[in-house]
Image (cartoon, rainbow, N blue to C red; front, side):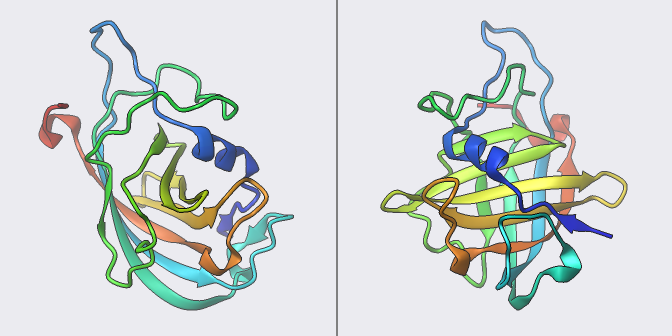
Length: 186
């Protein structure tokens, strides 16, 4: 039975303060492939943040399409950043939302500021939405055989204050572009 893991405090901690570290000093490091995610997300109305919920338990009142592009970047060679410290890692500017016909991310006031890309295990992203809040996107449970992953999205000011009116969850079809075909890093 598919599960949406909604006990996301650890991933939100990384996403709220995370970044993406890579090997330095001109060493050649392996690259993650370019990934295009085409998602079907439901707007949830009954998320219980105190426990893990089965997908069949979630109630959705509307459904939306969302597409993201994750560019080829060096594989992480360090631990994710400590959420207690400011982010010093740069986000590849090619990381972006490429389609949002229902404008469920229209409240974003800028590009992604933090990305912790630990593909295929997890990708955590944040973008500002105004005030002290950020839009948090967490991609997990990639199934290589099915080319599918889960995506969870909400707005948050901190780990304990999710915007319950802005919680979306669903599945994404994942198209992988081998690094050699994805173009060179800039």
